[in-house]
Length: 141
Image 1 (cartoon, rainbow, N blue to C red):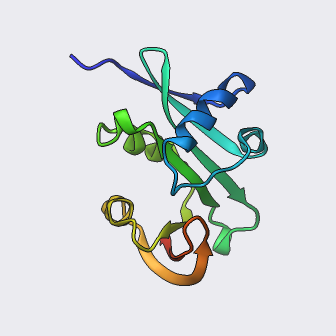
Image 2: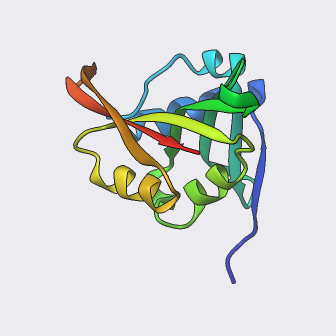
Image 3: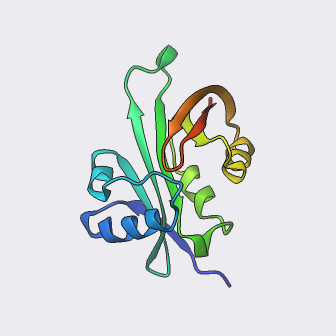
């Protein structure tokens, strides 16, 4: 039987594990972990170990009074990918409209977000670095 997953807010104690998860995902965002504290960052734990995190930026003044947010980063420990961690984190987002950017060549992420109702709404040239790559802008809601 699989262990239960817990979703909880980020704390200062999570800085090292966020850094480790980022390093294990070299094409993902590579922020200074303390910067995540300025946003709404949630952690996924299994058996007391952090296995992923999601950083969301709530946006003010949504269109037609709808609540809006932007996903800034979603990263999962490689040993726990494709086990429902990203799905559990995404399910906790409580906004009516959600925006995000995905590397153009990140097919698994594009498919994942499409499965959850995101659609392509734009394209940004050379948006990402290390390596330089275009972004697909996506929106749900």
